[in-house]
Amino acid sequence: MLTTRELQDKILHLKKEKNVCILAHAYQTHDVIEIADFIGDSFALSRKAQSAPQNTLLVCGVRFMAETAKILSPNKKVILAHPHAGCPMAEQLTVEELRNLKKAHPNAAVVAYINSTAALKTECDVCVTSASALKIVRNLPQEEILFVPDRNLGGWLAKQIPEKKFYFIDGGCPVHMQITAEDVVLARKEHPDALVLVHPECKAEVTSQADYAGSTTGIMEFAGKSDAKEFIIGTDNIIAEHLRFAHPDKKFYVLSKKCVCEDMRLITLQEIYECLMGEAGEEIILEDEERLKAQTSIDKMLEMNA
Figure 1: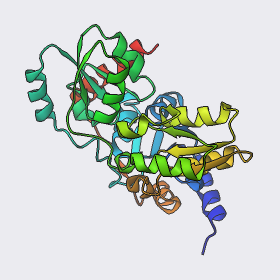
Figure 2 (figure 1 turned 120 degrees about the horizontal axis):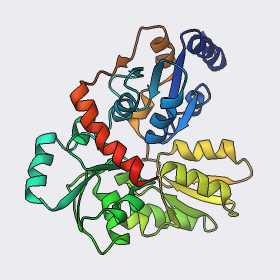
Figure 3 (figure 1 turned 90 degrees about the horizontal axis):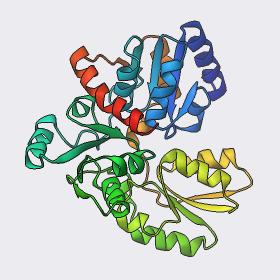
Figure 4 (figure 1 turned 90 degrees about the vertical axis):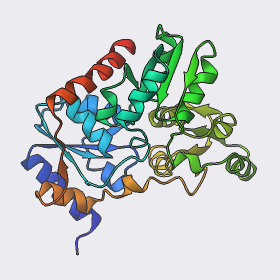
């Protein structure tokens, strides 16, 4: 039986031999993070992949992330490490449903969270990430915003941009939505000196009590730069573990034991090894028409967030 280190060494050898770039989302476990070429939020990974010299990208994340990588790197082979690794939030709205919403709100700018399918992106004016959403939505010329699919992130934006009118669907991340206001109260009682850092995919009752709300990368950067020594982390629990490795002089606690993305956990070292051996994974194929239409909304995001 192989040890973790031995399996990692095999993966490191194979990815070099086969000219493969491994992209790992920050929600991956630490053993996967250690063998990745790039680690980060979903869109940041796709951007880094564009400049990677390798011709094959192995995405250790969920399907919409692999689709985004393919949109931005159409000439590269993109493999999703586990075919069943999806994002429930990204799949909450169909293209036909969005078209009907657009008809109901003809004056609204259609803003899609990056956590959406490639097909959905083809019907949107601009994409946003949790880090870029505030700047982009605030600077859109339209006074009405149709924000999909996450009403929690959208609601967080609406509170900060009261001059605009927002429309939402009843969508959001089922993992982050499990965190409750009571979780924050209990965590503060247990760790009174800790700052509460949460993702804006959490419900308003949670973000309103936080000391900081921002993207996964934003949470990690805030914790690293802060003079505080204790933090309660309100996003996937693996982030608290990564932060413990990065800042051993500080303490990190999880806000809710329920905040675990099971789709991300489908990807293991063994799965990655089998992908590199050509025995697992799924190549992402997008038709040119869909890819180019989806890229328009991404290009608009890059232009507005420059």
